[in-house]
Structure formats: structure tokens, C-alpha cells
Length: 120
Image (cartoon, rainbow, N blue to C red; front, top):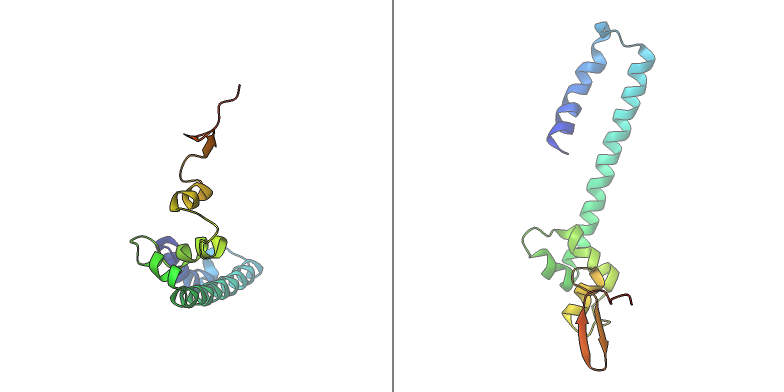
């Protein structure tokens, strides 16, 4: 949870108990119901994050990506899930082009051109 949502979650029980604040019982019931749903979403998110972390630990390619600073299990599993073991790519440059991180490469008559082909 972010700092703001943590503060809100901590304040909600007091807000819901303050019957003198002018909110109706119906409004309190609706907010209380949303709090329960929010807590369930947090629980489910933690469960899914645990599953992703276990998947990452069980896959060599994911573990290698996870070792890079700023990349966690969720980001590490995304390219592995989409591209598999990378066998479809002849070189790393082909993979980065597939991701959209490098200019497109066109070759005609043995001459390589990077970037979009010029429209004639």
C-alpha cells in the first residue's frame, strides 16, 4: 500500500465509528462494505505476488532478470512469459527491437538500415 492508502486505511475505523459526523447509517454501511472488499483485494494481491515470486525463483531466465537493480519478480516474469526462452530471436538486438526498445531494422541488398523506412 502507498503511504496515502495506509493512512486512509488506518483512519477509516475511526471515521466509521464517529456517529456524530453527519453521515447516515446507510453511508457507513456502504463504506464498511468497501473496506471489506479493499482488504480482500489486498489479500489477493499479496497472494498473487507470492505466486509470481515463486514462479520467478523456479525459472533461470527470470532469476537472472530479477538480479538486475530495479527489476523485481513481476517485471522479470513478463518478458519470459511473452518471449519464452528467447530461441525465436537470433540476437539480443532482435529481442530489444521486438520489445520496441531499438529502431526497426530493414535490410535490402545486403545494406542494413535502422529506423522506419522512408515513405517515397
